[in-house]
Structures are given as C-alpha cells and as structure tokens.
View 1 (spheres, rainbow, N blue to C red):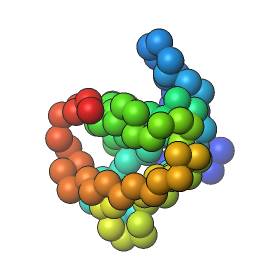
View 2: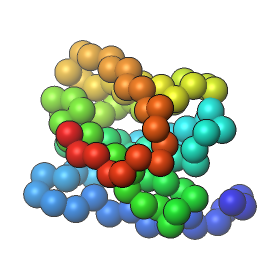
View 3: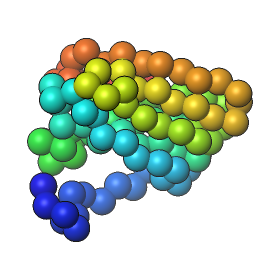
Length: 102
C-alpha cells in the first residue's frame, strides 16, 4: 500500500444501506482489515489482502448513524459509538472467516 494509492471503491448496496460515515484499519498485525461505518447503523469489514473481499457485515450495529469507529491498538477489538448513546466493543478473532451477516 502506498500513500495516495486507491485501495478500492466502496459502495454500500441495498435498501437503507446509507452513506459511508467513517473508516478504520485493524492494527493487530493479524489481518489487513478495513472497517466501514454507515449512516444507517451498519458496519462492514473488508479484507484488504484479498481484493477488498467482504469479511463481515454487522447490520444495525446501532440504532442510527455510526458516529465513531476505532480498532483498539494491537488488539482484534473494534469499538463503535453512535447517537443512540451506546458504545459497543466487538471482538474479531478469526480474520479469515467467511462472510458473516448479523
């Protein structure tokens, strides 16, 4: 990956998918993962080492737009926050698992 290089284009599909609200990169050296939050409350995780293959889709991660999205440095933990006044921590210990939708 190089500075300024286009890694891929993301389009959130489906009814009510929303717009991209934020992005974050996993930093635990176990997987090259990009997470994308949407204005409709969904969070999608993509495998950067495999042509941006969808790894996980967390539908309705929050009741409304996801306002914050971060990976805990060096850990397989993603933290999200939203206007529903919640903070959620999600573990992702299997980086190569097939696409899971919830």
